[in-house]
Image 1 (cartoon, rainbow, N blue to C red):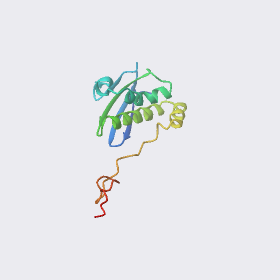
Image 2: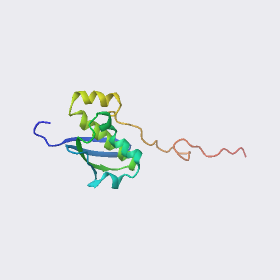
Image 3: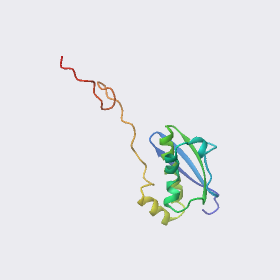
Image 4: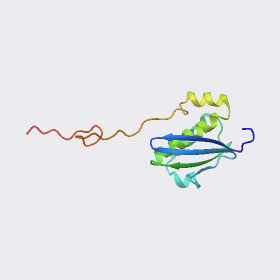
Length: 131
């Protein structure tokens, strides 16, 4: 972190993209210039966002400023967590190993499957009628 006051990383999940800056601080998380509690109501999604800090034992050491676009709140929470993990990994090689073991540095590539013609959804077929 020589001569830099923040660390930047990009996180992705489903169709969401998060640009994340982590700054040494007190643990304040800002998403799209609003407090995390205003943007995300569910405790499970807050836990998803905070998981990289918990795994790396760095809770309340960094402030987070994230800008997220696309997708819903679940995909956005995953994208922010991915960005935070990538930013933390660049701080210390030992932390990188811990985050990698917990699978936080791998982009979750699962996206919605496209709908096929002749079907109602991606795999749901119309009801079969014999007559």
